[in-house]
Length: 151
Image 1: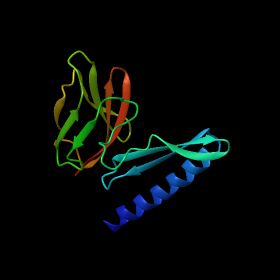
Image 2: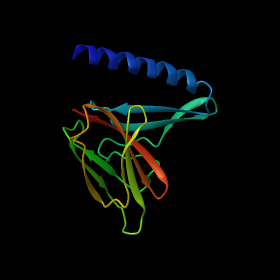
Image 3: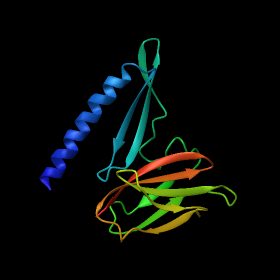
Image 4: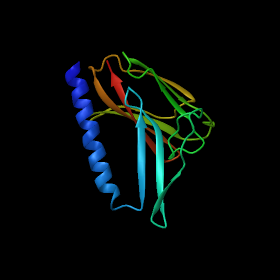
């Protein structure tokens, strides 16, 4: 278990170094916060104005976690980590909106495709081995991705 934590810390430090190096060449800087399961909980955009960095689009603590690519939709995925049964809630999904999902393994191999999602969708991944997976949700052509941990 401590080896996993050490790897996670090393990966986080590497990610911070790479992100800070890349941000030197971009117009805006981005900061992200993650919960213990690896889900992104906050995105901060630091906008350069007159050589100074200012914060824009910072979610407040009481607001639901959203992905800016899916404006007006709040997505909840639980439980994560999961032993096999996963629930996906997409708030404000209206009847005619096209919504789909895919699950890929860490190598990119497509494992599940599901079209015509409802506001609440149940998935059973209990037959999958314990590993990390990528859940991609598409609503009206806008994409968000989530890391799913199968125990």
